Amino acid sequence: MQMAALMQDLPADFGHHALAVLQIVFINLLLGGDNAIAIAMTCRSLPPQQRRAGVWLGTGLGVVLRFVMVYAIGFLLAIPYMHIVAGLLLAWIGMQLLREDHAADAQPDAAPGAKALWRAVMLILFADFAMSLDNGLATAAVAQTLPEASRMPIVLAGLAVGAPAIVLGSTVMLRVIERFPLTIWLGSALLGWIAADMLLADPHVAQALRAGADVLGDGAGNERFAHWLLSIAMAALVVFVPFAQRLGLRRSRAG
Image 1 (spheres, helix red, strand yellow):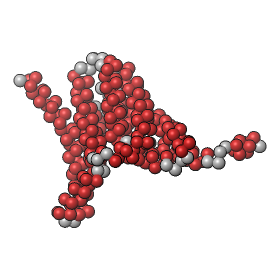
Image 2 (cartoon, helix red, strand yellow):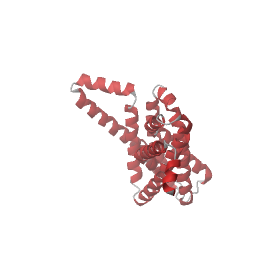
Image 3 (tube, rainbow, N blue to C red):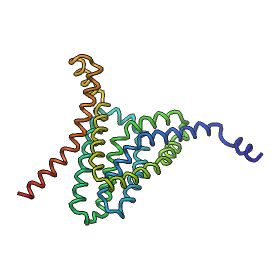
Image 4 (cartoon, rainbow, N blue to C red):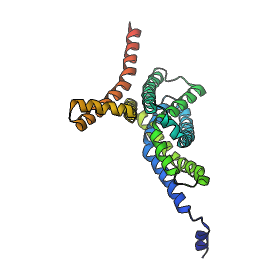
């Protein structure tokens, strides 16, 4: 009897609100894997005692950033070439992470301190921003189905509930990177691949790709080939630039 009375006291739209929270959690878990990899790669260069703080700070501030982006997504996507900017930013972050990895290996006993911690957090936020455009768009679509009075707390609840999963994923990735250092290079290549997807999400780039495919004939097949070629080229570029710089530095030291 008490349970039945409790159920009657629940608001009629409780089920819709709960479903919206679950949808937002699912969206962030589905699209948050890349964020977890970026967080782990960024925090890898920090000393062990700062890594947990970096993961939690990056994830927590990332939740706030994505919450803001949900309400600013229309403005952001209206900015010309926004996806191109996000793609280039993500490629730059991938290169920076490899440079940070080299610096950490060169000075393994150096304690970067609070300055390096916040620098890592800022890199995480930049990566979150670059990778969360589609995330923000999908979450905003769910938010539009909610009453305006309850929209903000429900969106924030959905983002916050998914945050521990990103922390867990980042922690697992950190252990994988520690055990298999080559993973840092694969992760940076993945960021380059995602950067190519961001570039292709821009209508101007997509139109140029289709136009080039039409000129070559067999538009659909050539468009897919060009898509793969751009993705591979971006992944290779993100890895090659830091590698070439590292190789040049070794040669200058040897000379």
